[in-house]
Amino acid sequence: MKLSETILIALAVGSLLLWILEVRRTSFAESYWILMVCLAFLFSFQFIRNRRLEREKVVSPTIKPMQADRNRKKKKK
Image 1 (cartoon, rainbow, N blue to C red):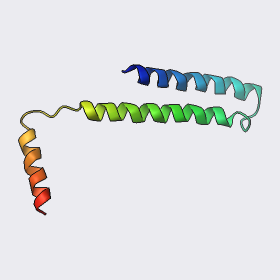
Image 2 (image 1 turned 30 degrees about the vertical axis):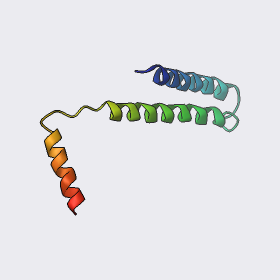
Image 3 (image 1 turned 180 degrees about the horizontal axis):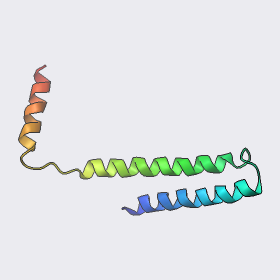
Image 4 (image 1 turned 180 degrees about the vertical axis):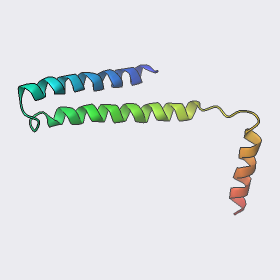
């Protein structure tokens, strides 16, 4: 995991814990925004992680010619 991913997941966990404490102190409606912040951190973590994994995806040498053929067929249509 990259540093940015670690920071985002730590922020998500921290805001979730803060939300749990805040719900116990106040009502759900008053602490709803903290839950949304937690979800925003989680979604941004997942987006950044998936984008990094897509960039790092390595195609095996035997599949590369098949992909090139498939791309040529798509261009012809």
